[in-house]
Length: 467
Picture 1 (cartoon, one colour):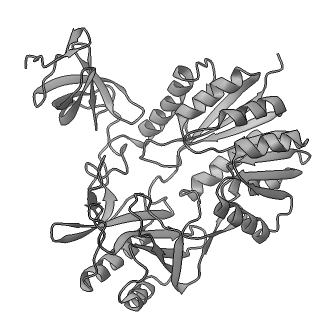
Picture 2 (picture 1 turned 90 degrees about the horizontal axis):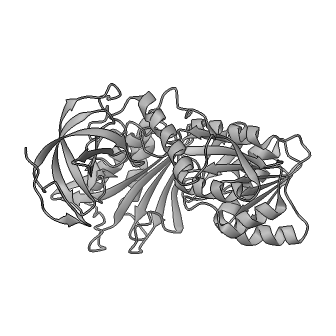
């Protein structure tokens, strides 16, 4: 079909028209997993396509510098293409890489890390190992959060659709543990049978907002949480009886109160209606208590892989003082404590530090001290008081490390920095800062913590540049 001209993009003509159909070759992939192609050198993004494919698309959005196409037909498929096993893959916003083979998805993640380090970090010749995947990349999540809503006359409990808050209802999720799906279906039937209202984001009315499950993969213990726009649930004893009769491994049923007009899932108040306030699980030999509000890595198998790599990179001999920054509930701190002389864990979330102290006590660890506050404030203060680290481990949120903190680490000049990252872009930015201040990146190990999603964790060994 001949190209049409809609508008001028800068000084050039836009060669595509909305709602028209085109054939296009996919020449690359974005970091979000979209295929990228060109029509008369004009960039077009296509969800669901893979590099090397020839596809037929319909243009659904036109901008002055790019367009977005909807995939209609695959004219020439990539050898990396796979049939998604999830029945709602095309609608659900959870697993955006299920149309790729497992090996292709791992290579995609490795390439994302390499490209960010090269493009944003301006670093060449950095050793980036192949992403470590899972032997069985399904049913790996120990936490599920199902939004609840109404679609016309039907109650739906599932996951949000791509780029929206429309709820996709599905009886089975291939990355959640099967017991989470069982609990979700029991709650859904209970809500339907007892005509209990569900939350409407637009009006702020309705009672039940989310169903959350947390499972101890090594203990088998299950927690079920109903997030309410209120303080009580009608017929709650009936629900307790139904859940515990069908799922005997349930240890905790909790009502979480969230009456705020917010997209944040959980409120701060929990009401235990059955069993205990927490469940327990293990990472390696360490035992952790998990509450509805606890931060705990969702993939316990790969968490152990990631933490063991961090411990390896730390290179501890038993004589080192270690800082574990953005320590959360102390999971990495406890791993480090086995081979360190002293570990200081720092975290801004007060509830997490409370959990971290409890976890240290639970595991009989006495060489870890946890401090609450912003790392960029606490670490400069500790350094001024003469407390310095031989090894620093940082595991920041997606925004990366604060520059004040990085400056302090440069002044402190530890022998090694181990950087655990969930965002290759901010990781690359911070690596550029450190390498410009006398450090060198030795190697990077990506770990696939979230199979079939675009997300990737990285563990990086950074040392002082002695040249």
